[in-house]
Length: 218
Image (cartoon, rainbow, N blue to C red; front, side, top):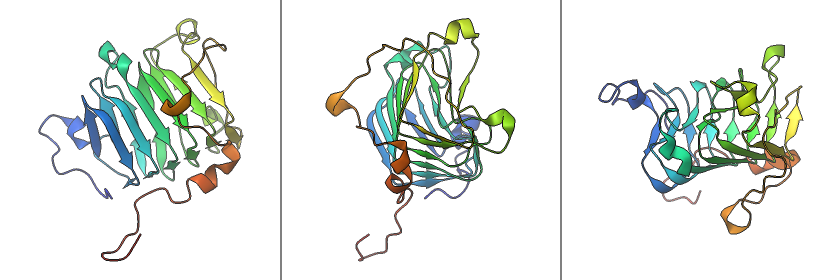
């Protein structure tokens, strides 16, 4: 469990303060961790990393939580494929759950009980499939939209493929879809098969670090 800022801050710049940085890597699985209050982001996936899964985690108390792709000037991130599944986005989170560039992101069966600005954002034409998540909007009437596009006019981002399927929207939350409605996403063993958003609270019940003790089964 990561409970405070990282002690290696300053060696490469502020980005050293990420709780976890996946840099130029593939076939990475991050599972059952609890994270909050890092110097920079909680988890960054950058430099053409791909085949990344982040699952069963509990995130709280942070501004810019998850970043997939560090800059709009690095198109090598087009190979990026990230799955975000069965996570609980809890109290004190503001934005970037995740914030994506290029690549393909599958957001499936996560529980967004808190976000203060937006939940899912992006730039540079990422492809995003949101399936079976629960989004609970904040009280702020100006923050009901789940999605946020950066550095692009609507004439450009309307072609980005962002789709919401079987998501549960509560307290006025809404997801702005875009792109070709007939676009066919991957299927089969390469994709987690989603459950309806109404089941998310059960699917994420045990998100976060295990409360394990030595010599006792978790």
